[in-house]
Image (spheres, each protein chain N blue to C red):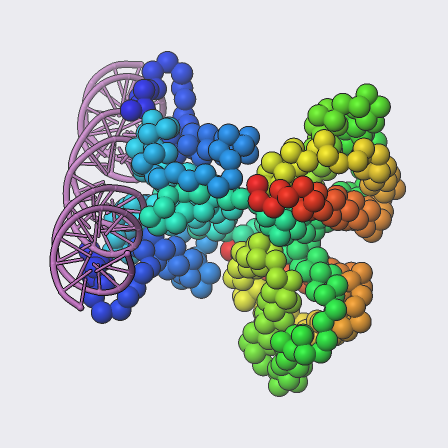
Length: 230
Length: 230
DNA sequence: TTCGAAAATAACGTATACTTAAACTTATAC
DNA sequence: GTATAAGTTTAAGTATACGTTATTTTCGAA
């Protein structure tokens, strides 16, 4: 049983339910619990060294986010992502992020205000030059993440995070199959320019097309490589 | 205690947790549990004639949707919606629905395919002529709801539903304070035309501006009428 | 062997019991 | 009278117990 129920020492205020949620989510996103795997409540509870109660609560949250499915007598199943799912997810990300770009462009920020974005695109260029795709992916994520945060819309921020998480597994596996993301870097600069020019329409439109294209590429790859479910 | 634990007669397959979720959500959206009200788990459980376990599970889902907040020793609190919250919510609805309009316009539907939308705008016109605002609101909802459903994107559908629910209380209370929604009917027709013309850019743009304006009106009303929290 | 019915199993939904610690009360010192 | 400390209460978090029922297995008949 949970080795440290009454947490000596550290003031760990994290409930078991929260721990379970975090742990399971990490394992799913990190592909340590691959799509399709099933576990009974009891089994998960044992894996996590706790009782079924907090386990169930974590499962409910994961199911709400669309990461798992809970079928009454078959336990919790990690949901595979079909090309169709990916398409749905990218339509949502596209809608939300392009809106975010427009909102940020309407804020009248100066170069200082968008420093995190400038740093991100710079890093993307460096990484691309160095052929370091992992660094590129990190910088890319930094750009998207900071762009959304600049809106200040908390709901928007957490929504986009949720849907980006969903695509994470797929993006990572396909990272090295994709053509060099030169166009992607151009797109980001264009969005950045539009934001600095205070031009929401352009920012929105450029970002929308950027995500739309990226989504298509990803979905085509899923089909081509017979990664029909992952 | 739950009068019908082993459900004789009817094949009621609805779990208590699900019942609790539905019941609480209806009471919140219907303003029977007004914003700001707090209840301890025990109290909710008693109100619903069940134990704390399914009650907690329902609360988790409601908290995930942003309808309530659960603070460790103060129970569940129905969240008030400030103008700031409303602004966040409308930014999201605007982003998602305008994307939906664009997607539907890309489907190449004919008049038969968008019949539900045509019926809805017709009803809106009739209701406006008859000065029946409640009927108008119902038709308006029908239009938005069917528009989104036509995309076939299940995730998008349920997301938009969630955020529309959040604005529901506010829209209803302000319904009779708003100017006659003549412009709104025009907007809907314009979106419909763009869909029939297979013009995603126009559909998206018109719908975006429509929701953007509606959102502004609503938020201004919240401020003016000192409905700063509801 | 195959099918179907009956029995056995066990997973889930729910209730309840237990534990911890936050919030409130009381008491005591200054 | 205020402030602090000790004691009390109680809500939430977790574990466990229990009943129901879906699933699986067993077993007999065709």
